[in-house]
Length: 306
Length: 122
Ligand code: FES
Ligand SMILES: [Fe+2]
Image (cartoon, rainbow over all chains, first blue to last red; front, side):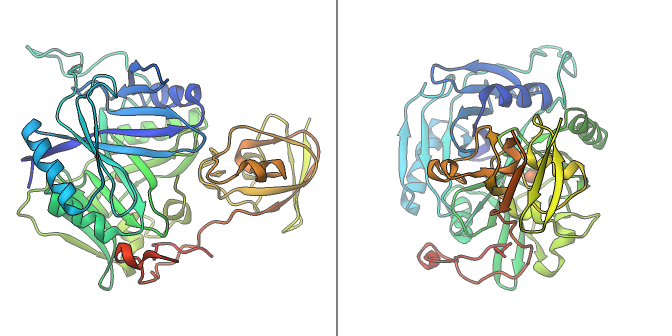
């Protein structure tokens, strides 16, 4: 149910192969702000309009991909309640003490049928968006690159899609906003814990635990086009776009970070309420579902993951 | 200065300067042969085997090129620049876009072997 337990995707930890290249990409190209770096060398970032201390953690490793995706929950009581529920669902649950990530409270980490690690936490230090809380101005000055406002969602690839969808719907109270069906087999699921068209998307894929993209919010189509210009200006590896998705209606562009992790910047979806019925896309219209203008499937978009 | 790159599979050849990777040079010349994906050493689709010539590679995902493979000349073309003329063979492959899904992988138990995917390997 909307906004009662899980509030939002609060952070994602992305593995990169070269921290300096990654820092340049995420701060100067996307326009995230670096807010910390810890003694393990992990780098903490946030979008300018986010309130909490960080939403992206970069960790240097010998292979790219996603370490975990974390969701902020309403309070400590909710955290305990949901920890019990994911454990009862059959997930392996691990308790991570406050401070293991700088500025973050205790985390409940759990695995999932698609092989991804997720986390829940209730506390994170407040950083603010720099505009203040009393008579604030409307936007921040001095931002770089695409000037993304905030981290929005991830799309993950994994094998037991039905299992992870069940976990998020039944144990964590997410709603299924849209689904892609091939006959009676679900091949894609769009899940929300809020009023957004998706907070998490998952696509069925032969391998477990794959990362398709992390997505960041822009405010307008004009900003999406400006992002496209920046991708050319800095010779960033383009995946596809600017275009629109049929699914979720997002206006979007996809590109890769220097380690090959896919990023999305997008604007616009619709308002979801928990009493809305689920939208279904059929596999024979998958082209239009994914790329509303082209109506063609794109090998790279479907097959390239980290 | 640039070196000649020969893709054994197709007989296609193109020039590549030492400061540009094998994949981007091919793409910039509008040539084909090595599949392109992330262009960042992460996805593995541009994997090639260097048959002759010398190259230098930046960090490549260990999920796609093991230490042993790297020692025997397997590299990701998007992370590799030539140091001489090069002859190579394409190893990585782009997953074929087909909507047909193998109806397996519906539960954790049935996942042994091959599970369904939106895209299947060619
Ligand atoms: S294109 Fe992805 S590893 Fe080279
Ligand atoms: Fe997305």
